[in-house]
Amino acid sequence: MSGRCGLPVSTLSKVENAKMSPSYDKLVRISAALEVDIAALLSSAERAADDGPGLVFPVGGRRSITPAGEGRCVETDQYAHLYPASDMLNKKLVPIIAELKARTIEEFGELLSHEGEEFAYVLEGSVLLYSNVYAPVLLHKGDSIYFDSRMGHAYLAAEPGRCVVMSICSAAQASPASAQDRANMSI
Image (cartoon, rainbow, N blue to C red; front, side):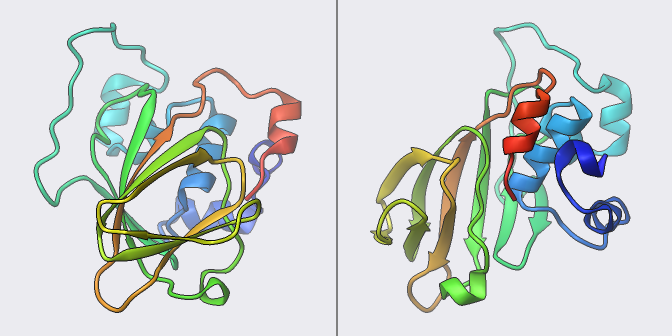
């Protein structure tokens, strides 16, 4: 598994034993290596057992309602993520509500990257978005940005108080990743 997703065995063990919450990019890598939809990793064990990994729902008429403040919570050093619609498998988009924790790039650490594209909308506070391609950009409540998620990026809280971003990421393909795709995946 470590070889397939490019993550150390120790990291996978921590995730499996609920001693570490994986970031979105790590979830993408794990779901690609397992050849399952990312929602299968976020769903409860009972839901995953009922639906089975990779179950394809018919197009049209699908929906998922997530009451305010509910969804799958994932805590990392950089973010407190809330994944609405985590019960729906095989989504083309992955919505994420992220409360930003880090205030400096040093505090954040290594920039994150993952396949696909990302749209972010600032719900509360001000956000400083770093990338390895562009100069940092300051976004305020109501501002949005759309970018290629393969470039390294980090959302930082740019002011005191709560800082919250709604991010919508294009989902990784449900089909198996090729060896070349896995080799090109970055943390």
